[in-house]
Image (tube, rainbow, N blue to C red):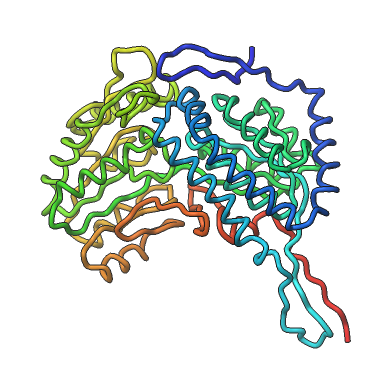
Length: 457
């Protein structure tokens, strides 16, 4: 039975099933991709830029349709889906506007030669393994820079995103990408491992869990393939001072529950100065309780379902385990008695280092709050996890906040904002949050051959 299924998380109803590829199709897919690379790498940069602009326009023009698809696939409220699509279009446009200059030949100090230059060249067929939580945006981060560079793509999306991944392939082809330069596949994990090992695949990019990243990295390393991994996170949100802790808490609640809390760079651990702690917790509970939970296609819904019943049950299990170990549950944390994958958003305090939740990523609408006495304690607590994606510091004293932000063991540190992602900013983490960077000039370098050409005098 196929594992690629659209099961609407709002209703629990299976709407469509998609067949996976057969084992004997793998060779054809790899051969087609390799052949397409030979021609795509020789197209002009102007042609590739035109493709990026047409792709961006399609995401804007079809925003209503595309947002509706992911609402049914993974439960994202329509306004949030449209926000994702706007960002997706921005990424394609950013590379169209800025990419050509980044691809220009770089003149080096000749160092005794007549000429020493570096070019940024494509490497071949790449395999992208994408997650369900931001179906369009995650693909754009991988596809836009690499198609511009001249690489070709085989795209394996999450099993619940079969419909949206097919639409992305359709948009790419309509925008001018040759059929075999962007191939969408529905494949098993075993088939993906076989493809990574094949000599025609030159690199693999995965966004997903640490467990999936470890499995992909192992196969890639064994076969000397470069990998880029954007994995989980347990981001700290550090509140040092505030004139209005309740207002700060309301903003924190909105950040934590966006996309039903299913974002790797969502603030998950709220580290609050003890003088603000009680007011912050009270304000957070009030804001969380005021969210409208419901069908993501209905106007006014702020919190849709989680991506699946299994995902919902895992989050509820984590909450229950923390409470059993002595944590305090202030609100929510239970499955709702209705069809689909809904749960009530939760606020937890009293989590200690001995509890499982202290070190786990919780991928759902659950905020964990910790009091601290000062800056050093806040930094120690923030860094005392295996993840290192991003973190934020909030204070009216900018220099104090910057100093503390510079002590966070993360790939992205923010002051008075959290999780900002823009096309020209690098995105990625350290520790168990993965390695490599996407977006901006960095996204054009991960799968590029930085090729030296030197001419003797």
